Structure formats: C-alpha cells, structure tokens
Length: 178
Image (cartoon, rainbow, N blue to C red; front, side, top):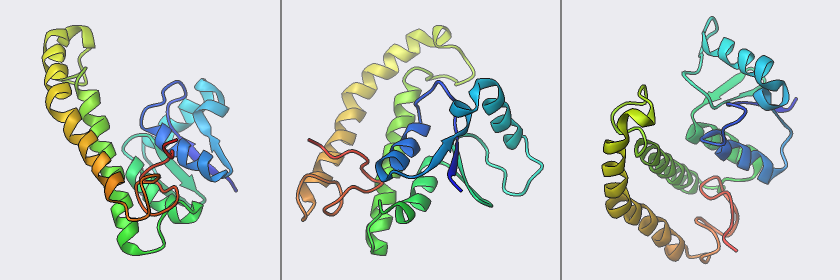
C-alpha cells in the first residue's frame, strides 16, 4: 500500500520536504489533496484533522503508513528516513540528520514570520510596516547565522562537501549540491 501524504494541494510549503523525500527515494505515495482534487482531497484531510480517532494530527502535513499516522515534517522524515534509505545507519547520524531537519524547520518558521510578524491570524496587508522591519532584521541577523551553520556542516563533513552528512543523500539534505 502506498504512503498517503496529506497537505494542501496548491502550496509547496512544509509538505514539500516530505514530497522531496518520497520522490528522491522513488517511493509509492498518494498526495491525497492533489490527486483526489481540492474538494474531495482537502475535505478528507480536514475531516481527519477534526478528530474522532486516536492520535489525530494537529495540522498538515501528515503521513499515513497503514495504521500509523505521523505528523510534523521532521517527525515524518525521521520516520521515513530509514524506510527509504535516506538515513544514516548509526543512531548518532540519524539524530544529527533529525537535528538538521529541525534547524531547517526553525529557519522556515522564521522566514514565514517575516510576513506575519504580529499574528498569523492577520493579513499581510494589516502588518506591512512590522513585516518590513522584521524582514530587514531577519536578512541582516538571522539568515547569515543559518547559512553559516549549514556551510559549516558541509565543510566539516569528513566524507566531503557534496552532502551534509556522510557520503549520500539523507533527510537532512534532500538535494545534493551540483
């Protein structure tokens, strides 16, 4: 049975990290909201989020693998990594790969917050002034720290700078630099 990925059909966003892992591994999966159409697929996804079953996810993306439902990008990738051959064999490596993904999650959240600095419940137009200030500070202070860290991870990899961890693709880096 193929994996079932639940995420919004027209948004790359956080769900794209899971799609990249599934595609990189050539795994059989159904992108439920995209393949079942926005109406039926999104309705099915939101019905699952309304509860009524044990271990209901809070929000998409989430993945169903038979009876197992896994939510949150880093958690999904931590689960899929060994199954798809996208995780180091040793525990220390898997934990480090998960840490990289959690750092990416933090980075993506900070990027998102540049256009919703007051509240995600407000439209961008209602917080443009604050968004401009937040974006300026983010570009000046935070982006160099994140990119510097990722560059350091690549340069410190004993297996070479082609991958973030080891000598092959992992969930901590879903696309090799060319």
